[in-house]
Length: 73
Image 1 (cartoon, rainbow, N blue to C red):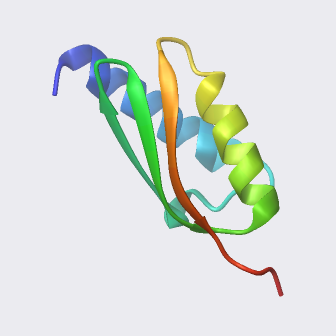
Image 2 (image 1 turned 120 degrees about the vertical axis):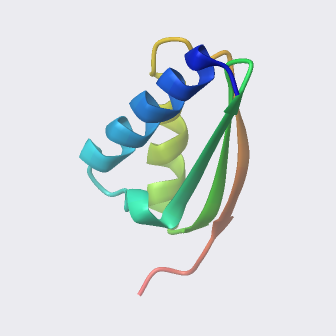
């Protein structure tokens, strides 16, 4: 992992932690060459918001969605 990828990872994790409707603890973030991969189990609202937040981080080239949508309570 390059220094730039580590920086993007930290920025995405911080942005997810601050985002409403997203539990950052439920999402695993990996970055390679600016491509962010999100993995985990989330609600429909958290899914859409997490993708939006990750795409908005400076340096992100694209986002690969490997999130599983669970039914909300």
